[in-house]
Each structure stands twice: as structure tokens, then as C-alpha cells.
Length: 616
Image 1 (cartoon, helix red, strand yellow):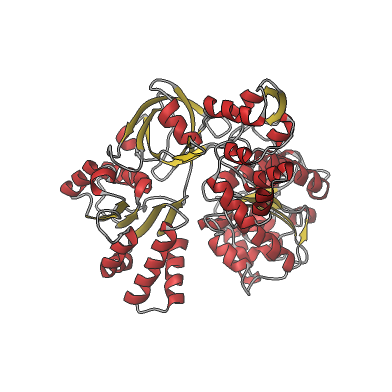
Image 2 (spheres, helix red, strand yellow):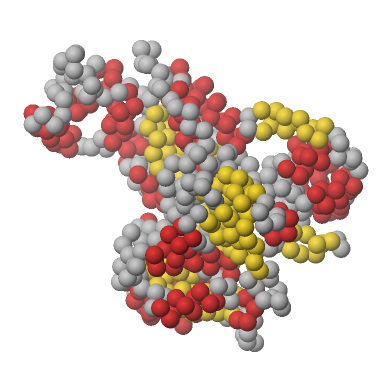
């Protein structure tokens, strides 16, 4: 018998004792696991299993039907930074199994890239991180697939669902990279790539239904039993399974909003506390809290006046898979995004109004993206009038999506509470004050004791080291300090012995030193080994956290060389890029490396979960 056949047999020779036979999904998983084994490795594994079987630790294996060995499998890979792609992939797995398809679902980090040459049907659900970067878990697979060692794939059928945010320049780039490269390697699309914006639910649902419908006849065995699928509802987002999710949030009690910047600060930053009560909702340090919000009724009223609508107009929206009727005012308050503008709306309003200025802006993607980032919906419609019906207007808007905030507490310290550090978005436009949708909701429209809908967004890509003795370097200016407050609470609760180094920056020492007393207490107790601060406006020459890193370059490199984990949280557009370049410079100088080698050094840290970012 060939070693491949021995290894993949699934039936026992004793028909009365078949409890140890592999079911279809177990067989599919085993096939994928051994896909890149050599003949020698397969023979060794076969002998190993046979030996274990003789010892009574496995049921005796017998030849399986040849059809089972060559049964086609749908492999689903997800590349997820915060959990959205994982959730979509999980729903696809559920639908495919219900249709009788053999499925293997894997985090792309756990997938052996070379095994792709043996796949027949592959689906990738990929989010894009930062400025067009793959999620941390997808770095190695991305490099392999786009590199010279990637094999030709003439026998592969595939599709890609890309998740992104159109307000960023490199919208859905990771998914686009995968799609274009697979085509270049000879693979065939089962279905065209779909690029999803932040309100991805409807598009991903349609894509899932289409994929399953397309593949079920080809991948479903005529005599294969349909898999039993439990109704999982919203996928769990915390470390343990939870009944609460983005689709099914917890209605929690809003208990505190306290301003933690000074009276003369240019910023309004709030320390927010939310009581989870007896919900059982848990989180880990490094996770984010999703907050659902409603728009300001006064802003909605002003928008309706600008549009010459009464607000009573009836419109239809798809909510949770069902088309529902709303009044226009109700939809603008509870369902539709009006405080963030997508470039697609700028293009839509330019076409509707025929305004020359808007048409010029909309004709260039970068200009449209920049313009959208600086204007709310009311600002766009105020610039140019357009005759349009209510349904067409709401069809051009994105759905409200929850805002994610880095959790600023550890449950080991605060138990049934969750803390946030929220910078209030506020600026003047057209003679009015504009505020952020969620930040304004938390700071101005919610009162203590009222309910707020929340869920935990699990993030395995921003975790403390497994060993409490490992040193950590934390870089978090402004509200980027939030997760590091949680880190310190957790390390204190665990009596961790590892060194901790914090880099914090903001505008002024007297007005903007967030959680100053807590940091000073950690320094006094010795839990915080050292802290370097940079207050940009306290001297003529502006100083930022990257400048403090440069000053301590030799010591920073020394910490990295002795195994420190490095974390960055905060602004993605400037701070994170500047800090990254500073780190490259430090490693190049003190490691006596070239710039390319220094980049590879950081890339290696990132692949090994020693360089983690939570940037926005």
C-alpha cells in the first residue's frame, strides 16, 4: 500500500467499531496538514501512526475508498488584524458546511504557504492594515506568494474578499495583492474579487451566498452527508466564547465621563468607564471595545433643512439581511453615517449637483479622499445644491459602523468595568461646531446611568508577552496611551518581573499629561522601569516621541537585543511612520547593519510578535 493511502485511510476494518473513523471535515483537515509532506515524510508518518495503532492508542486503520483520498476540499484562509475578516470567514465556513462542502478554515498564519500548490479550491478573506500593509498574521504568506518561490497554480480555483476603508489611500490593497498574484500564477477566479468598505456586512453576505452557490455542485459529494451546523449567531470576539458581538451588542451602563486634560488644553480627552454588570463579557488587555452610537438630532435637523426634506419621507434600508422601512429622520439618527464622509459620497454629490469645484475634487481619488476626511456630510451638501429624492440620498450614504477604542483597563484590576481613553473630535465649520459621531455621543449626549451598546473586538495582534519576565517598550503618545495603562494594570496584577519602558508624548506637560499620577506611582513602585516624555509645545523646538527614542538609541537597541517586545499605539499617518523610521535608523546604527537589513530586523520582530502596532 502506498504511504499516502495508509496515512489517509478513514474507515476501520471492523464495521462494528467505526467510532474512530475520520469524518469528511477531519479528513479534509488531515489532507491539508500533510499537503507538503515529501514521500519519505509521508512514509514516516504512516509508520508512526501504525505503531501507535498497534499499541492500542488508535483504532486499527484499513484502506479507505479511493474517492475519499481525492475528495476536493474548500480551504478558507483569513488574514485579520482585529477580527472582521475572521468573522466573515467563519460565516462562509458555516454556509459551506451547511451545503455539504468539505471545509478547512485557517488563520493564514497557521497555513503552510507551500501547500498552496496542492489546493484545488481556495478562498481568502483579507483585511488591509494601516497604509496598504497586510495584517501581522499574513506577513509571511504575503511575502511568499508575491516572491520568487511561489509556484505556478494552473489547477487552483479561488476567490478573494477584501476588507478595507476607502478613507485610506491603499483601500483593500492586501486583498488586491492576493487576487492579482494568484491570477498571475495561473489560478482561475471562481468569482471576481469583492472590495468591501467599513460597512461590509451586506457585500460580504452577498459574496458568501454567491461563492457557496457556485461551488456546491462541484465540491459536494453525491453521497456525502450534510454537516450538522450549530447556529453560531455572532462570532465570539473575546478570549472566551461570548453571546455578545458586533451584531448582538451588550446594552451596558455608562457610568463615568471625566475630562483628563487641563482647562487650558487645546484637547478634550475623556476617561470613560462602562459597567458590564453581570453580563459575563470578558476582554484581554490589547483588545478594543466597539461602541455603537446615534447621531446628534440637532445635526440631523440641520442636514434636513439643507436638503429641503421634512424628515418624514419614507425610505427603505437593509438591516440584518431584511429590508425595513424608516422615516428619513429616524434613519439619519440611528442607521446612517453622517459625521464621516466617504470619497464615494463626494463623487455622488459632485455628479448630482454638477458643481464645478466638487467635480474637480471628485475627479482625483487622492483629492476626493482628502476632501472627504475634512468634511462631514452636511458640509458637502452645503457647498452645492442638488435636486434629489430621499431614497437616492440614503443609498449614497454608508451605514453607521461602531467605533473601536483601545481598552484602557485590565479586568484583573477593574473587574466588571471597562475603561476607555477618548479624544473628542471637535472643530469649527461653516459657523458651527462639528463633533465626532461616537466621541460626541460619549462625551455630550450620554448621561451617567444610561445604556450604551458595546462589544469586545478581540485582537491577538496586540498582546503582552507570554513570559512575565520579558521586557516591553511601549510607545503611545496622546490617546495612544490607553492600552499601555491596561498593560501596566495587568503586569501589576500578575506580579510580572519584566522591565517596562514607556514613551509618552503630547502638547504640554501641565495640560496634557494623561494619567500622570498613575504613571508616577508605577515609577515609584518600580513596576515602571523608566518613562521618557515629549511635550511638543513646552519649548521653542518641537519634541516628539521619536526624538526621545533617538536620544536613548543605544539603550533601546540593547533592550531589543535582550528580547524586549515593542509596541506602538496611536496615529498611523505620521507618528507611527516616524517612529518606525527612527527604529530603522537605531537598528542600522547600533546593529551595524544596512538599511535593508535593519528593515528585515524589524520585519522579523513583527513576524515573531515582538513588534506590534495598534494604529488608526
